[in-house]
Length: 89
Image (cartoon, rainbow, N blue to C red; front, side, top):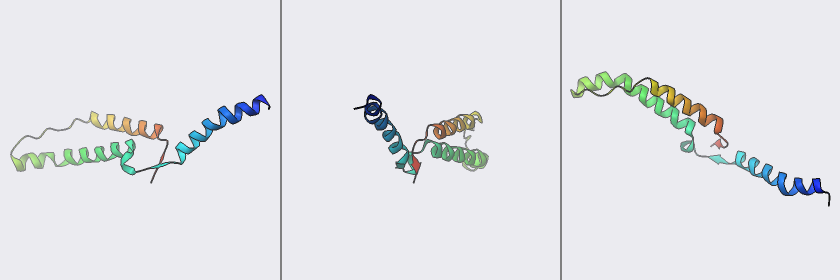
């Protein structure tokens, strides 16, 4: 047997097949880091928008979530997109 053929069939091909299978697998939407960073960003934006009204309504001072949190969540969203290896169903 040719050594190049043996190396390809026994070492290279299984690794390629494994990577292709990984990309072909699907995952649920709630398993996505990118989706969760987006959802959390939206929830925080809504909270910060209604926070003054809620504080006034309940008569207590609710904390304001700092704006730098959006930077962290955006970074996590980009990281999730870069490291994504499965398609969302």
